[in-house]
Length: 178
Image (cartoon, rainbow, N blue to C red; front, side):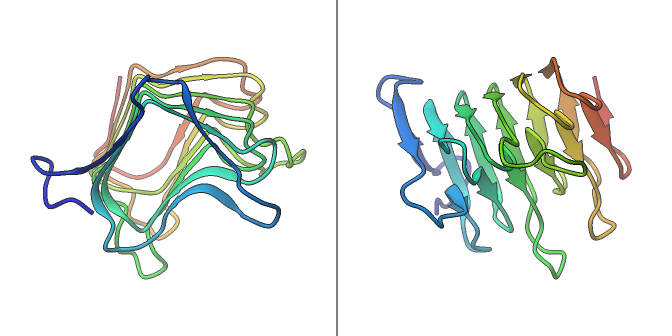
């Protein structure tokens, strides 16, 4: 974990979109898992995250102050990026999903409610400039309020094409969509 946005921990590809993280072995449910409440002020940038048709590609939760920027997220058996609060309602604050390309998601799920390119339940977060394209059998961005708290998020300049349901489905309050 980093100390602040001025002193984050950064995992960055030396050559953007050329360094790949693959699903390591059978039975692993996530390629990248940021699942501890103490994980914060972390930047993951310029990577290719490839689940090879199995698992969720990136799980962010109940971490806070996380930035995923300029990554390729692909071949996900489950969700592309799953951002969530903890069961007690903590975490999931200040998650920044910026300029990522997400495609070929939900390859192991064929019936609704299924999985999504981005499934998100956080607060005070930004989902901006992402490009989501087929195959995408369900929602492009599904922002929902599992624990009644989805609020104060910004969804802007995301391009979602070829998903079977809505490009953006959002519940909650005080969010900006543009």
